[in-house]
Image 1 (cartoon, each protein chain N blue to C red):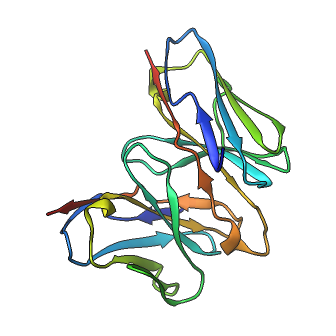
Image 2 (image 1 turned 30 degrees about the horizontal axis):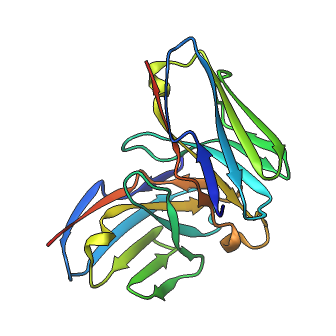
Image 3 (image 1 turned 30 degrees about the vertical axis):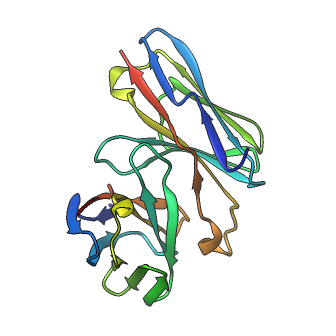
Length: 117
Length: 109
């Protein structure tokens, strides 16, 4: 496998369910990200892990819980979601280097389309 | 606040040229990125500008004017496969990426 892979590609869940999204990168990158993409809205950064440490949490509700067990894997645990959480959830990775901002190109996975009923 | 503006949708004809504009107001500037996203697929990197001027990469070019807070993506010899959304993003002084809502480009035969 190459690049960034996300599973599942589609997920339908009720408001009381607990599910997880999985992301795996095969690029040797040192940073991984969760983004939320809603129609006609800018990408919303949810979480960033740099060298496996969470460095950003942009006021994301606690019903979203990230986990980064190593530099290649990232999970987003979901529980008691709301219908407005329905969106495309994109995982991305990059080789973060503050001194080379142009090198911080994100490689995205194809996303997990989440529908909350 | 920080803001990126780009047109919601544009239509162009196969074989023609189209320019997608992006204007930004951000806290500092550490570069501007363009990504392409086909429907149902991952966004993919197109270009990066940090200095003023034009960067050319095959049929695609990207221009930056930092003094005007303005960039454009120029697509030449349009092909049907260029139908996609084009996302503009600026890295601010805190190395955060600020994203535009994307421009959906429709190519007609």
